[in-house]
Image (cartoon, rainbow, N blue to C red):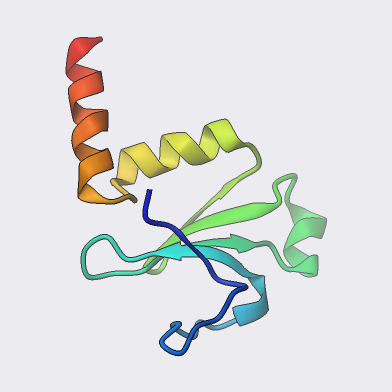
Length: 92
């Protein structure tokens, strides 16, 4: 889908605040979209384990189903997958 594992740094890997908490990232248009693990302090408050971060907006989630819904809703994948999701939605 175009997501990159952030733990396997390459020469041109982007740097983010709380770099060790970033698990995956993608840049479908002009903004990075991240999947981050919650900090220990955030875990005390929330029942979720991860955040889906788009710019300054973040949405907490806990399951793969929620993640897939977020990816589809925000078009957080390569264009070929976005096209697939749009066609699939029309066929339903």
